[in-house]
Image (cartoon, rainbow, N blue to C red; front, side, top):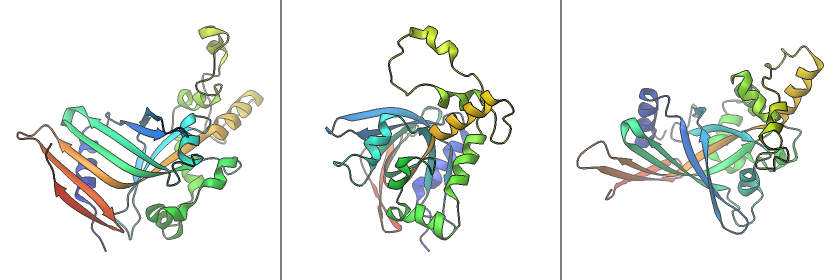
Length: 237
């Protein structure tokens, strides 16, 4: 059984020590090969029990955002590749991660047809061997968020024009209850809308560039996945 890559141990240690630094940047390409980058919140890491070298990072998004189509509907990017840049300032460490991205939406959303778990060894192992139910994971992640955060998925499509200016936003729901706890018709409607727009982003790393700037002289290593094994080489920072 291949061992976990050393970059993963380093990242997990740094995350544990600096848990508030849980925001990374993720870049994707549109159909015109123009790059777009935005910030994402790291949620958790899932690792198949029998495949410790194949971690899956979990984040979340609104299924209506442009990055969803850039990742799964872009003919110029058939492998759904993205790059993550995660700078953890207190540790002075940077992780640049090339990964295959998977969007996990509501099963009733058309984008669910594009979810091919067999395209990723790690994700496939989680689903087929460890029996991870991706819909349960999506709903549990949604439920773990604050009522204010859940309400953000009730807003109009991200990036759409606010015709009424900022005043329009005052009419948006401020709180959404957990699944199973909605009592009023309004709460039930908002919960259904929020959960329908909520999706997970699963990232399966294929190459990692790890820089340590808190050490003098600085250090940098590049890791490349081949099958379930990772090569490691030292490079100039």
